[in-house]
Length: 365
Image 1 (cartoon, rainbow, N blue to C red):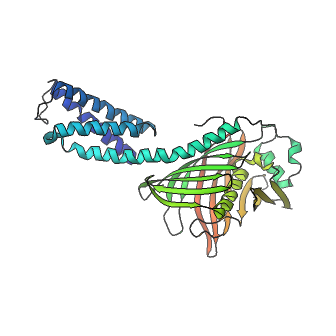
Image 2: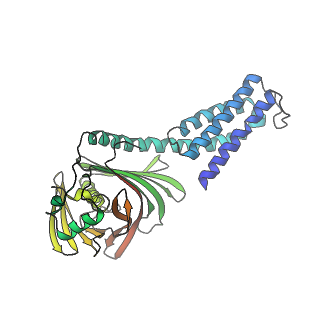
Image 3: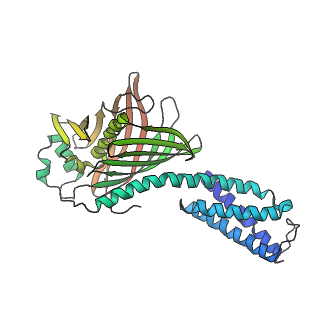
């Protein structure tokens, strides 16, 4: 709703500048402007109108990089013209302030996201030199029975080994004691050198917020900014790296199952419906128990090695999953939840709807 309101303000404000052009060239009687306007100034009023209309169009189309820059130019030109006709046009300053503030937030969001895109770009450039052999039945033999059944169900046999994945989510999240907020997210994971780059956009109590999780090398970090300007969360360190290793492995299990054929994973059979996995990266070892149903679907992932952001303590972490669908030839879950098992009971803090998954991505979108 706010998006449409802003576009409406930009378009109306832009069209009002047409009055200056009509006044300057005496194409119509413009009673709203009592001061004379020269023809050169009139052309500038017309240019301002075009710039604002272009700004509104680019904003609506989602051109996050260009529209804020065009908005800055539009506001600057408009405000100069308003000063030249201050007596008649001074209230246009209000609209300019609104456009300017939203443009600052838009530019800050793009600038924040630029770091994420650069990290992804570097990973994609490295992936271009990698070969992807086909997965065979022989590759599945060392795995516990339920894991083999899962990979057959997903449909990995006969397909290339997965080197990276691009995932798009939408859903809702919350902190304990707080309300749900809506979010959209894009992430890229790389598996030759384990990396995970997760960028989220959300609306928290009506204010836009952005978050970036980066897992790279032997470091993991998380930043969250309100209006993409004011940091409210900034975490990194050894404990963060261990916790995000669990997150990376969780992604592998649920959304890139072909990567479970990996020498960094040690498997331990439990029974016909579960198996324990220990994943090692950069000397950090984490473990999880995977639970499967009779169809071969992975229905839950449970680990005791992940930290909460709120108090940096370890609690049991689980991600029940369901509603398996076909994504680019692989049958994987389309809905999942993230749950903390606190001493006082389970707390669902995230609900995730999978929108798209692409494997062995070659280019940054």
